[in-house]
Length: 170
Image 1 (tube, rainbow, N blue to C red):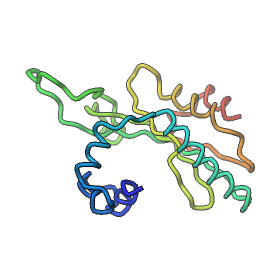
Image 2 (cartoon, rainbow, N blue to C red; image 1 turned 90 degrees about the vertical axis):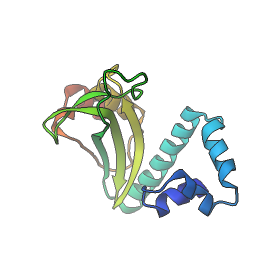
Image 3 (cartoon, one colour; image 1 turned 180 degrees about the horizontal axis):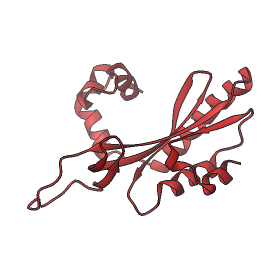
């Protein structure tokens, strides 16, 4: 819990050393946990998704306000590697940046958020690696979402509007 508190207190701009400031554990214990701890990523992801659905859907049922499923993608730009580099950044590729109007080197991620009555929570964050299209990523996430208790809307950039996604949300 101290890790989450540290992240929110620093406004996502802190360092891992900040975790020790809000923990009863020594800094090296936290570093060992982060570096060597055994993580069940799917269990963590499923638990987070279930919590987000519970919070957003209960707010929708309580207030009658609509649920918004918001999809967006972003690029975390990296410095283009030299042709002599021995170990380039893992999973970094050239992606089309609509903001820059050109190819940009880095990591691209697709984010799906759920929102109701001013509450916005991240439901899924998927690192894009070109082995599966962004349309397919969003379609897979849409298939796992339970039907909301009230009217819902899908908000996305124009390149996500496809028959596959519309039919999945229908």
